[in-house]
Length: 471
Image 1 (spheres, rainbow, N blue to C red):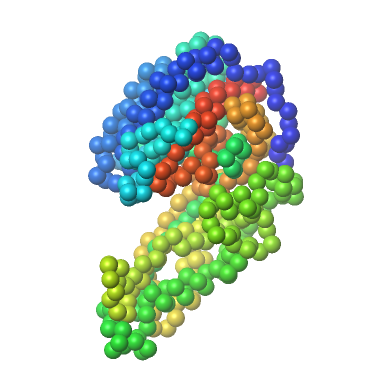
Image 2 (cartoon, rainbow, N blue to C red):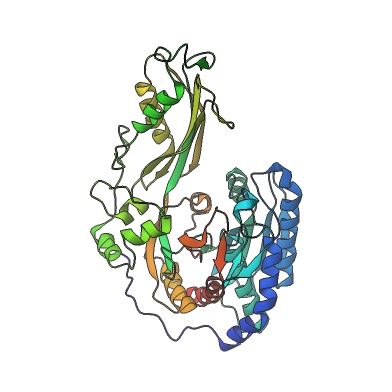
């Protein structure tokens, strides 16, 4: 059970010298952040290889500038992984491994942005650019905190290691290989990941549970070629309609997944967690406003937070076929394609879930149509952390100090591959210490990070190191 009512430890606080340094250097640090955000480090776009390399080099140089040692870049079959460390606290002190990524999502159409996505600008008390919230901004806040602690010489009580990769938005196999090959280099007591989110704007939180993810791509074929809808309409099957009916049969109108066995391993939240979540300053209407949807799914008796955090999902994330150019072309499509993504909860395994899904699809494909599974993706298993770990209490207290308001211990519905990787390969727990909010437009046009989130993040990471060392 998480004790969200545990009082703070007032004797542990951010030093005055740190705060003076932070305020004095804030303008210069925001300019540095703008430079980091100016790199179009889109890992999904092979045409941005030079930008990826330049961004990795800038990160490496910046780690050296702020006082880290042993800074180096590790070349991989993909993008470089940057490492740096500060071990001045000594062998007996605890060590914190900080994870981050410098790659970003594609920007999409520039016309949907108020300003160019890789020309960062500050307006309305926020910094706007692709990667501002996910996750160059939060990552840079941790670097600014470490810079201030080192520069002021107040005696940083923890050793700190940074591993910053460039493929989080693309894949996890190179990171998996790197961690497996460098267990001694990465050895630490806990990993901190700033690639997380508050449960709502102005409501800081740290998560002790993350959902996993699997996905697949499929094709339905009903014939050799597209057909004239006048000549063959009413007799020829329509691949798009077959696909739509097949996909519609995966979920009930309320949102319950109809695949046999899909919920067999689901444990759900404990009574204690449900009681705590009922007290959180967020409700269904707040979630609907965050999502910007007309309404929410009805659900099947569980709360909105349960459906977001501890229940699995199945979503159609892409569907196409037939004529898609300008104008109308009256043909009956012979092929249709779709992509499906599922979020998994603890005790659900990835491969069995893919097998259940493909079995359902094959069994429900009608006569006169052929189904082909084109691709499957085993993304990442679910991940959990004991709420009793000292890092959880340190994170909650640090968030409260950093943002000047009550902070909470929750779960999140997102999937974060690195948490599972370091748990499996290094036996290391992860504390989520991110500073984004659901309304920051992550992955969307006009992505931004409020400056209050940046400032709070700088203070929070410093406070966490001090509190974790004391714990």
